[in-house]
Image (tube, rainbow, N blue to C red):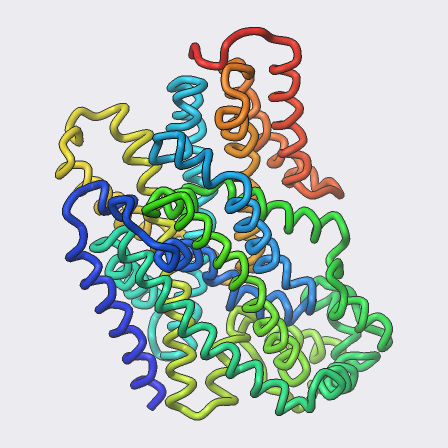
Length: 505
């Protein structure tokens, strides 16, 4: 019955992908839906990519370790959509461009576009990689005998079905179906957790019994490299604080999501797909409203699993300390928190529907982002260096082949790093995109002619280098804060001290 539920949901999304492909007649239909989308399709295209592995599996995974602070991914995403709707919809649509890097090229020249294309595509690739890791983990827990290599191949195949035929139409329609299923399944899961735990007070009591001053609570540093929990106060500070990972880290994560949404081709593409400014704005605002509540459900599931499950690393740490592990179920890795909840606590058919929904959530996120990355590479890189894709038909073929190549590369990379924390990749990805694109693109949209092209290129180059330096030297500051600070400072200095027109590279 579980397999039947999974198969039904996957068949539904494949059918949507094939149906949407019938609406694609040319490259414009593929990339922006022909500029005919209404608010529902705009919202579906945005949430289809934004509500992905990090917003569901990654949020439950992070909540297992840090509780309420796992909300920053969906909360920051919602705030990013709000900023996009209120400040950027009109300027983006009036720009007459179809990629964010084209906006930068028009103002600062081809050199800025090429550099930004490579770095922005790298940032998007990190998020696609997170989706592929999540999908492989999901498939291997649903089908324990499935080898990771087979799971990776199946991941690529289903993601291709999701978007490679219908492009923007497939991303939008699939996103609408996915969000509807997510709300039904996750709200149902939330009600189940609330009932099983006896409300918030019962959940807190279960967490205290499992972790506060217990042997398990005192091997947290050894097993998971997080602080030990000697008493109930330490437990409350970790699991019921929005800044449990530190104010700068969590505030930086929120900022990276807000600016990352504004700096990501996929979400701008959804804006360009709308039939009017009003339709685009309504669709983005709807996304801002729908995204944050999904994080709360993932947090409650993560906390419930934390109260009753341990990880394999914790079991090993207890054994090394001469302690007996509690009578809890053991998770091979925390990426399994949400799927294990469905398998262990739901009737088989319902568990299959939930797992199928999670599967298409992850698939939709990776597929939608691969569409945006493909647009950048084809429009901003391949066409500059190749004369073989000038015709619309050739460009459409190049877009589809590029998507397939991106997903295959992500699958190969995912097989080498299966245990990576999904939200860490998500925050890093959003931060890199924001540091490279946000300040130059904002200058090109709102302050045309005031920033010299050389300063824009310097900002795009120095900001990711400064982020890398923070990571390399392990400095106690969020890399995005440093990267954005460098980018804004370079752009500000360029506008203040130079009278050179923006374009000219």
